[in-house]
Length: 136
Length: 181
Image (cartoon, rainbow over all chains, first blue to last red; front, side, top):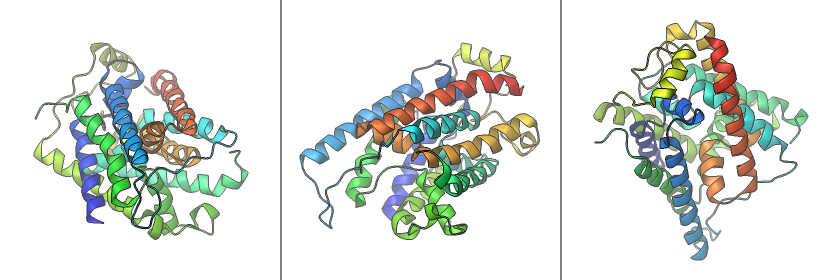
């Protein structure tokens, strides 16, 4: 468990030092004003993708024998990704933060983001409540 | 330390979290699942989506999330954020949309306790927060799970989700935000 905490701390520190948790940087991204955020996301995808490729080729397994890797996501009709993704995108631009940065901002001295986190929990709870009636 | 941390260093470090979590315990990188775990821990209310064993499947991730908060706090103390150098065009666009305070990580006129009491602050914080929680649960992931881990794993579902993220973000930035002046 301490390793997960330390890894999370490294992530939080990078989010702050690279200004990823800045509302202004997110607005700049959505307004195509700078390469900064695109560069971060694209290089993270390339590094993570290369790592996954290496882990797959080496056929690495966990202590319980299961192959290391990410579970495939069920595509279904794809509607949940379109609708959920779009709703999240609106929230991302309004708050200027996705879930990790919301939490990092509280640590970085923007305590009002606790209200946004509480609201996000209500949002997730509402999804759970409506889930049987939503198209997926 | 240079400010901001260059994009290629930030991208490299964030990208390495994906294999680090797999090597540590075959865990998938994804922050938004924590919202589901917290709901399951505090207010499951018999809802099927919250009936999973959150301690078994999510305690590691909640620990990771606590680290995110602590890491940002320590970094803000050791190497406080400098004023952000935004593109002049974006500054002009945001000024036209009614944003005037560019000194902090976030515009304090919106993201503060007094800002929360304005219509704009209420929409940005409360409505925005709700959509982050609802949307990520519906889409089954956020920027970390879909845009980074999912795209790195070449999953079609994640590509669709990320297109949705951008469609929603563009809509809110260009159409919603200027209405909230």
